[in-house]
Length: 125
Image 1: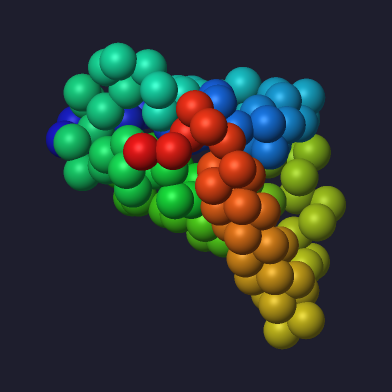
Image 2: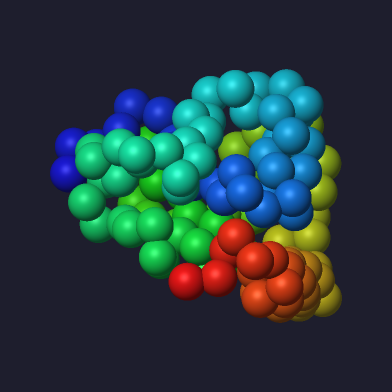
C-alpha cells in the first residue's frame, strides 16, 4: 500500500448516522484535507488493500498521512488532535473522564449503527 499524502476517512454513505457525521466534519475548517471515501464506491479499497468493506461496515476507519490505520475512537482522537475546529475539544482526551466519554460515544455509535443495519431491508446480507 502506498502511503497517502492526506488522511483518508472511510464512511458508509448508506447510513444516515454516518452521513451526518461526514456532513458535520465537512463543516469544520481544515477538514477538507481529509479525503472522504464511501465504502460503497466500487473501487473504494483498490488503493487500500489492508481494509475491506466488511471491516469498515463495523466501525469508522481512517488512514492517516503516514499510512497508519485508525478505527473507532482512534479516528475521533485523530480528528480532535488535528483540526482547529475540533481541537477545542482536545482537553477531553487529556483526562480519564474525557477518554471514557470518547469510548462511550464510540460504543453508542456502533450499537446504534448495528441496530439500524438490522432494521434496514437493503442492508441485510
